Image (cartoon, rainbow, N blue to C red; front, side, top):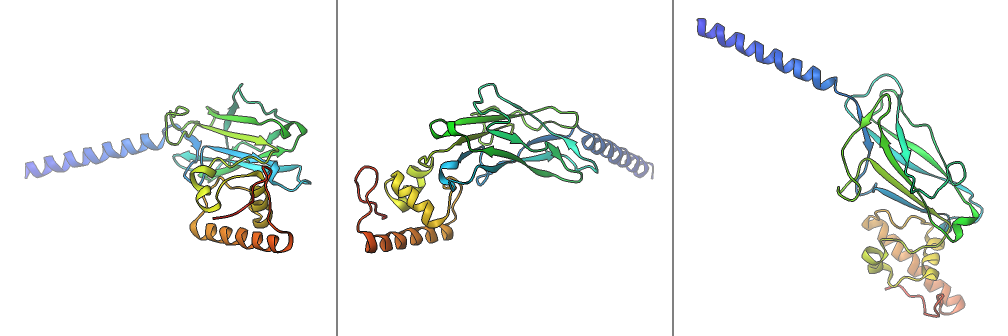
Length: 237
């Protein structure tokens, strides 16, 4: 009987200790990081060059996610802009409120981007780093270039040029062939799609392929072959 009592008391002590550990874990400092996945990579390349001429401002987003439990009050998020950033706050961009809303685990903070004359021949960047605020500590110890998902840093590149998508040679060329500015502009106009670096799902890609092929066929029926900026005929595989 004494042995049963002993084991009962021992089990009670262990459970009590676990409860204390859980409370300690619960009270750990709240942390925050940039939420990143395959469809939400660690940078955004934004070009006004693929947008209508009259569009003078647009919006990109920074997605933040917390580690720990949501609370019933708004909490402050803090980021710094690297000295290497070429974009000027108030001229090229403005940042929306850096706040994690009450009872939220994730928030998308708007970055308002402005079309400026100098972007026709230059690319400017905004390099964000999460810093400690009065409510959050940085969520991970990720280092730029050393982690698959660098969750403390985010970069937005801004221009007003028709640039070759970064994923063209590795992915888009299989479906759309050799790149040219004329071809790419035709693809944008006929499909209405402006973001060609993000993930394109198979069903959507098939639709895009059929759309540009049919549009090119109709163009050639009315105008003859379309020639690109190098005098080469525009074709799709």
